[in-house]
Length: 182
Image 1 (tube, rainbow, N blue to C red):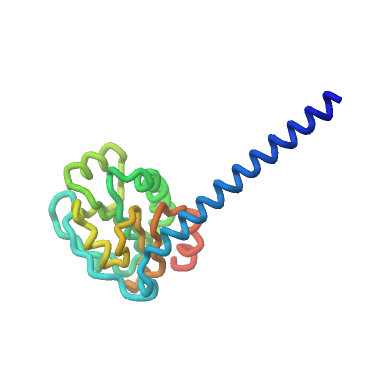
Image 2: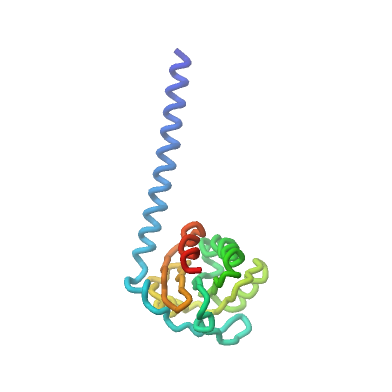
């Protein structure tokens, strides 16, 4: 009798854990779909918007200077937890694909001092430009009209947007497209 009761408890526990995992996966999928819905239609397949912003040294950088490379334009901020979780993955992608013509350009929606300190502490080794705390207008030109962070665009060698992604970007989702474009 005790064995049956124990078996019932084990089955109930497994069912509860399975339900919890399924609910978590459903919630993650729902959030991803909501974030994707915030991306303006028509962004993908269009030429990337003009981007001229100062780097950490105050020199103007232009997205056009990266023409001929596949560029991930990543809007982020030092105060954005999903942005910060994404940075190590972006560094890894750049290291893995950089020699084949891939670059990451971080567009900080933050102040230059905070970004500079953070970049030094975290060893960010890809180019950073500063959109400033009011960078929502810059993001809007790139299809992010709701100010979602992080927000990334993958721009091909010809300057055409091939991917617009609102929310945390997973390297395994980006890798197949990078393989195709590189």
